[in-house]
Length: 184
Length: 421
View 1 (tube, rainbow over the protein chains, first blue to last red):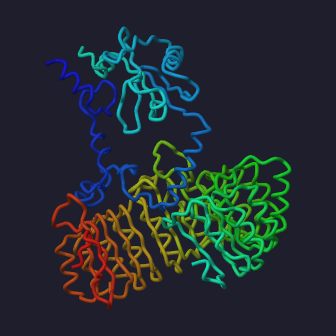
View 2 (view 1 turned 180 degrees about the horizontal axis):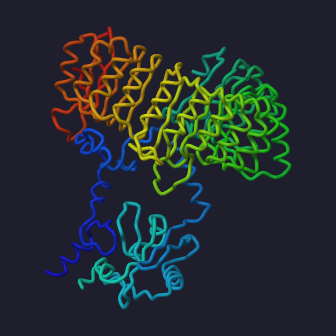
């Protein structure tokens, strides 16, 4: 059942560096909403502290200690900012020396976006199909969504995509093919 | 309620699920009602009946405090101010709509007539270009709350140049260190500074303020005694300089937002920073600590913070000894709140004698067990020892503990999730 293995691999949470096969440790931290007890109970003296990385604050309930009405105000302000401003996301390409930034609001849909990416990084994207992803090229455009998952560009409606896309990554090679359910 | 109260002088509405979309509560004030001195509906999220408000404000000539909510526009603000030049405290509504030049001039003129104004709040989403309208009012201001306006450093600097008498300032960290330098340069009488984070949960954004901004303020504002400071980096040396410049701190609340973060230059714990605070600031009443801290911080606190009444601790300490130092040393301690620290039963029980003289103790996500809490409850019957357990946690762990003295006995209104031991 080669297909199902490939499917599992494709849908597995992968936050590690490109090219590394082991699933990254980070994925469990991201899903864990509890304060990090494990790090604290093992602590005994300075040596333990130096090795323990500080817990990421985005996952900790009630931290930083900002009152809820202030939090609501920030969210309101941020929302109005993004409504009139652009939706700027970073674009990385495997192997490229530096990243670029684009404003997703400027484009009307996927064809335009993909064209721009091709021009920006001087490569060709394959033909998209829902069943097989991007065929005919070594590269596949992917994006990180709000949940931290890496998704193939093109699967969801454009409006949904631009509001959930946090950053873009043009994947190259075998890893790219693993992401689309082509079973190769 | 409003219809009954003919001599109401203060109406302060905090958001508590009031289900009134049309603001018709304002129309309930009869035309003969003129006694209102304080009207605050800043936290109400619904729209209001502006005509009713305008008439109300116009006839209450003793009104000194008016705090509007976000639904009130700049143009509406101008209409209110024209009839209320006596206001001492003003919370503006939204400060961001498009104004014609004429409207802007009228707003500025209305504000300049408010010669009694000493406090200004609101300024939601304030656009930098309209801030100059405030300049005439700024000369007398003693309290300026800009914590809902994401100002840049240059915008703040220009505004503060007109605020020489400022004693209290609240800002967002969008003003950055450069903005705080302007505070130090323009506000020599400053006593209180609060810097709130505009993006507390977004790790990608590395803006905000650093130790440099705080140090700059301390050089220019020697009278500073209350600070609340959210930042993403700090050093021991900076804090030592700050308290050397401002030894009169009564409230020192420093929040380094990344839990357990060390001095970013030396990579050492922040023990010496808080050591400097408690050694130098003998009048310290309230302290909030943060960053990577060992028991040494708490040794310092126990030894030197003899006037400390409130202490907030998170993600700090190395062992029970830390909390024991505080319980043993801080004779005036009233309120202690701790989360995510390696303090266990020995630490909890070291305060046995102390809790009755305190208002409360809160410990969450520490190493305290149910047995420890039961022992405390048994030894000290005049204390209420309440435990709140989290779903899925170990049976023996006391996830959240709240201890307070009570002569009324255990509470009878506790929800099922709260266990009184």
